[in-house]
Length: 230
Image 1 (cartoon, rainbow, N blue to C red):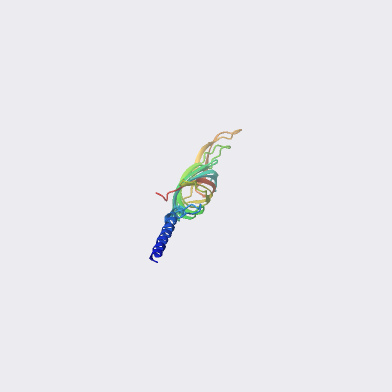
Image 2: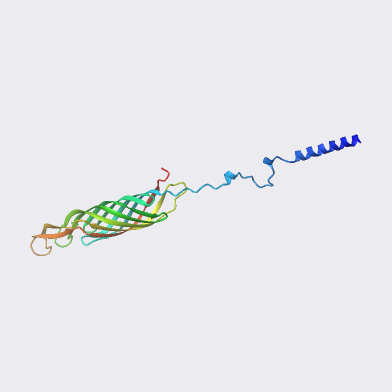
């Protein structure tokens, strides 16, 4: 009887050892061809946060007009955005027969990101040259002068997608500008009037106004530099 009991214990021990050897440890359990993916490596990388601090350098071509002068125009804007607040500088040059140059500072609201609306107040200085000039009949050289102005800018635009690994993006938009000169003046000029075909040269005096309400419209393009990482 004791012999059979000992034999049973030996058989049970051999079976337990065989099962233990066949069972792989938990950390190498077979995956039947499915790769083991670490939970941390499987988690998607967080998308980069869009920066709300940007510097924009924009230029444009358009037209301006007023009761003293008007013509084709160029515009240059340098803007810096702090979330919804925007500050910047604005310069314009315009002319056809007469010329106008301006430089000013701007401050206002920046609403939106990819599609944006910027509403800015502007204060600066206008300089005029050749206002009232007559290039074809008589030779009136016009008058020159300068005046401070206050105005506003409405800039509507679309920011283009950033390239991978880049911190800048393109910008396309339209700018509407309104400036009102704070000072109006009437200036006189005396010149030698040449009647061209007949008559004698004579001295003439003409008066022209400096200062106006200026309206302008521009097509704008440029670049926006994301400064969020600095």
